Length: 178
Image (cartoon, rainbow, N blue to C red; front, side, top):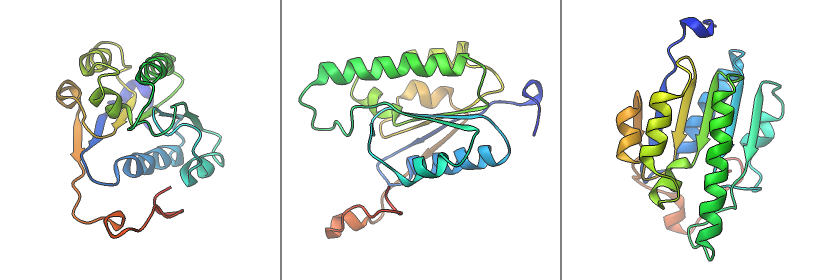
């Protein structure tokens, strides 16, 4: 693995309406961990919902996992709480990034927070441009990635739905969806 001083930290964004944004990012998490990198996963939405990825990450001593959101909040009854929680998670995320303890940080579902106007895309882009350690790999996921974040990113992938089992009434399946 390249030493930090010789590494060019990549900023990646996974966005779009299709499935696979977090799944792709979590594949990168395990790839980085497999190479011995210190990884931090911070989830903005999922909250305490158990996933197979989180269970797998517990087997790695170089993955730190934080599921901090209030859960799936698309039909929120308390937008003030969602804003407060998102702001707190964003501040926590900045601390983790600036700690220089990690080689790779995943901000899972942060783009949703921008889409709901809980966190400004410009604020995130400014932080990445001015404060992110140059050697740190950073991945941001979720629908509605703000244009400012897309502009500052090195790699942007938009997931587009073609077909999804849910449209046939098939609910999320353990081991595939979570």
